[in-house]
Figure 1 (cartoon, helix red, strand yellow):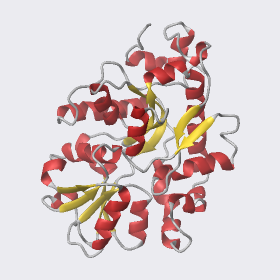
Figure 2 (figure 1 turned 60 degrees about the vertical axis):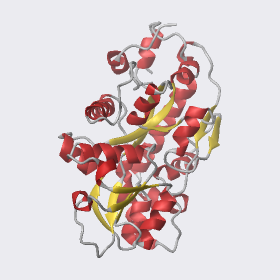
Figure 3 (figure 1 turned 90 degrees about the vertical axis):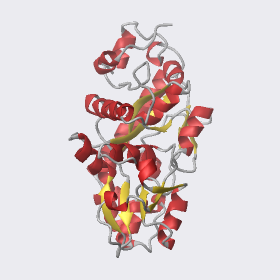
Figure 4 (figure 1 turned 135 degrees about the vertical axis):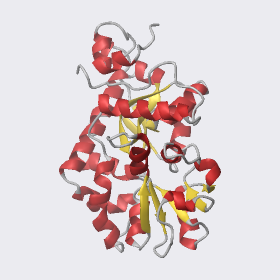
Length: 331
């Protein structure tokens, strides 16, 4: 069976290459186009509104999707690798780590831009993440894209995140509890939880995106993750993968066309009507988490992350095959 070619193939269009015979196992060439087990929306994560928006506009009609819930960052990646999910959020560093363990994960559709925030209590004396070195910090699990991007953004600024902070890893809700009890000096958390905390008076001192840009010299937003799948699944289910890609792009476009959708679906985020300040902040703070780009800019960003992760020892090696697929090109 021919292997998928290097990055030049991805940039000229994966489906165009398939049409030319370079990748004969894709659905575009007549193989399976069945359904897919996909990650469901989860309260407390930025992905929580994706399914409701899709259903509002009928974007998933005619698609054979089985929604399977996870328990937050890190868990859905485990479910993909175990086979419980066909498609889930997956970041480039996680894909590289998985490749080193023998799991061939590819990224084929937009996920989320980085929405990881550093927060401290309103009366805290700390002003920057560097000020917190040696202090207790709550974080998502170590195998999550949020944690890995925090490691990376720290490294490009000369900080060894794992060794220079007293890191308390755990589920997102556990981190929130630690922070609200005052058991940690700061929390590194994702949206919409960061917005809820800011609305209650917490102070945001940095974003991982800003730290990455400052330390790496990159100008484009830091991409947190993408829609990932095992390469074999994409090869055998090219039509389903392409449909999921188109669905995700359409959902993101609707969000950008009307950011107030994020406030309207506040309950999907897990934010109740009794939190009007948080609801009002959602459109402004979260709209940029849903990228419209899937192509060279995103792939360059992923590659920059991988190169820096290798440089700083966050990954031991880069995958032998490219992990970024453009299923939209050539359609």
